[in-house]
Length: 254
View 1: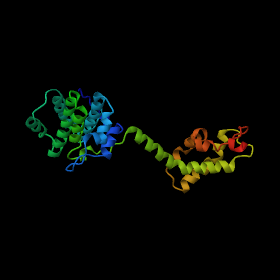
View 2 (view 1 turned 30 degrees about the vertical axis):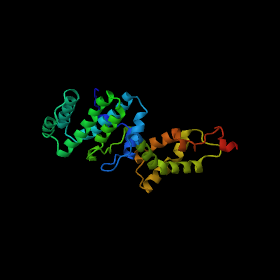
View 3 (view 1 turned 60 degrees about the vertical axis):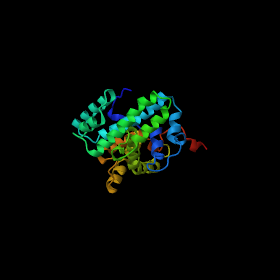
View 4 (view 1 turned 120 degrees about the vertical axis):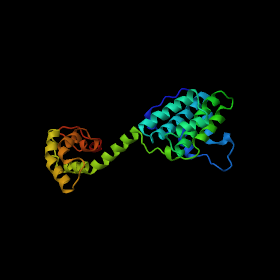
């Protein structure tokens, strides 16, 4: 199988197979249940052998990229060349070790061997009637030995974006609540003529609130622009802006 490497393999969300392997790790040195009873086996057996092989290949590549990221740029390229050679004309193990020892520690060489052994199981599985069992043996090799190089602390872009959005929401919540309190207290009985009137009525009080409470988010230098945006678009703040002749809310009509 041809392998294409991208740095964002690390950034990919965990696959179902990866989550299963974390939840039900192989137990070294203890009696193993029948292969067919393992959750890993049951998961792979649901697919065609080609699809199951791709599932395993995805994990092999991800683990390779996690190991690769611990290296300098120069050593990354050297390891990539060795991996490419292993895919076409594999070195013998002594020759492979000789090349790896030039720039990898003993522990990283062992980790690379686990990756290489797992990858080697894939073409064997594709050519065998015992394909899923061979893939399982490859996964056992992949998850053997030292795991510290494979602990992925890198979060996906979507996770980072989501956490950033949640963090910003929490940081701004107190100021939004203050803006709502002011709008509820200062809204004329007949409502505001326009949104700008609501903004002008509360901006100075919001600024004083930020200064008095030493609130950094939103920044005082940007609060005018931020408040204008909240009054127009924010679900919480804009709901408190009652304009003149504005249709009554569901709550008001009950």
